[in-house]
Length: 225
Picture 1 (tube, helix red, strand yellow):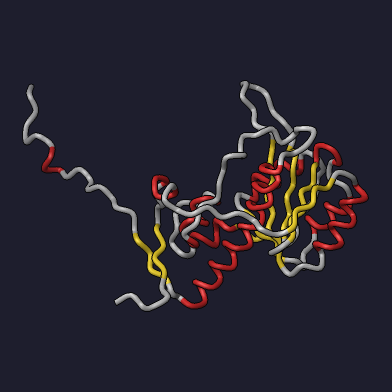
Picture 2 (cartoon, rainbow, N blue to C red):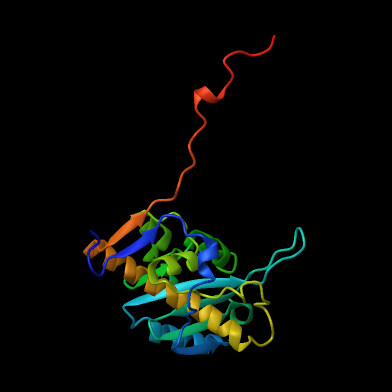
């Protein structure tokens, strides 16, 4: 019998199921940071938060051999998101201080890739970060994209429609800003839900179906000479 309040997680989340879910997006305040001075003030604010969600965006490449530096670093509390336009300000000392901080919990997804991209702008030693992929694996979840993780845990869909947009545009659109803020904020939501489920144990895991392996009996008993 499934206990009341218990949720069912899927080891593998079928992408087709995403289309049936209601959409969710960040509903807090969003600030775009365009100067080092603005970054200093934003970091002072962020350093007072107990937990931060973090993500990055890079202008997509469509030609072989082409590469771009990371253009946007989005950092969010549970109700306020800051979008640091790194293509305008680089990685100023205040942001490096935040990235190297060891006191504030900072959560993200595929952090190794984010760190590699950020270090191409300025080297730093990552402070206290939690990788959501490691946390999700402890619940038995195998699909690790942000969209699928959020859908699995909350039954809601995060839109990825702006993922391949131009993150180096002179002015970011409202849709880009909302997309970026949502991704950073969603990291906090995912982490909090995983902690809740680990503590309560109020979940069951629906294992992915595995096709039967080919048995020895399927081979011919003899082969032609």
